[in-house]
Image (tube, rainbow, N blue to C red; front, side, top):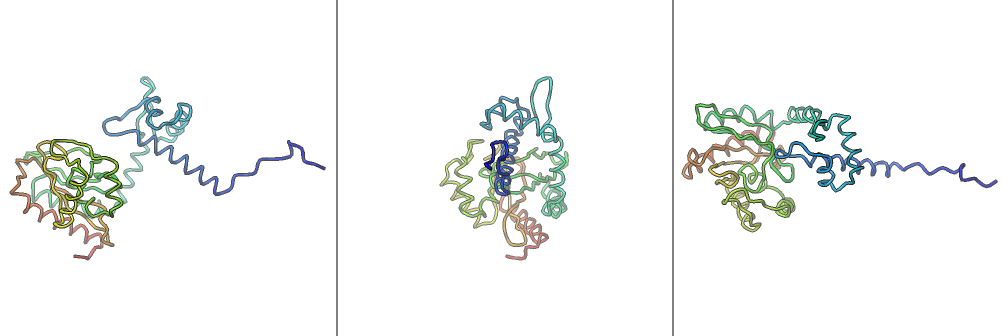
Length: 271
C-alpha cells in the first residue's frame, strides 16, 4: 500500500545541520552586538537593520529575543536599544577570571606610584587593544587616566607593543582592516607601520608620540603567557610635557621591567 502525502514526514534535521543553524544564529547575535560602540550607545531598529544588513523582520526577531534574555535593553519612549546589564555581568565574570588582570594589578599599582602617571593593561582581541584594568594617578600628580574600553592597535603604545609580536597573517589582517587617522602623527601607511613594528619588536617596547591623542605620549611593553605568546601589554601614559622625548628611554626600561615581572608571574621564564 503506497504512502499518502500525510503519512510522509520531512526528515529530522541532522546533528550537523542543527549545529550549522545554531552557529548562524549565534553569528547574527554577535552582528547585532557589534553594532554598538562607545560613541553610539543606543540605536534604533532601523539603524541596527542597516548595519547588520538583515531585513527589518529578522532584526526585530533578533532584538526581541536578545531583550528577553537581557542582552539588550529598550528605551520604549524613544524606541531605541542599548546593550543590556546581562552582558555587564558576563564581562565582570570574564575580568574576574583573567589571570593577567589578577597578577598585574599589584605590579601596575607599583608602576603607577613610581611614575606618577596613568597605567593601563590591555589584551589583544585580534583587531583592537581591549583595556581590562587601569591604575589612575592621584589628583596631586596632575594627570588623569583616560576612560577607554578599547583602543586601536596601530596608533597606541599598548597596541603596537602587542601587534609587533603577532604572526604575520595577524598583522596583515589588521592592516587590511584599515588604519584610521586620529591625529596628524597617526601612522596610516601600511609599510610605515610594518617598519615601526619591526623597531618595536627589536627594542622590546613601543611609543605613542601623540599618535592617538594630541598632546599625549605613552610607552608600552608586551606581556607573555607561560608559552611565551604575547597576548597583553602594559603602558604608562601622560601628557607630552610630562613625558618628554628625553624621558622615554629611561621610562621604557621601567615599563619593560614591570611587564617582564607580570609575564613571570604568569609562568613565563624566557629571556
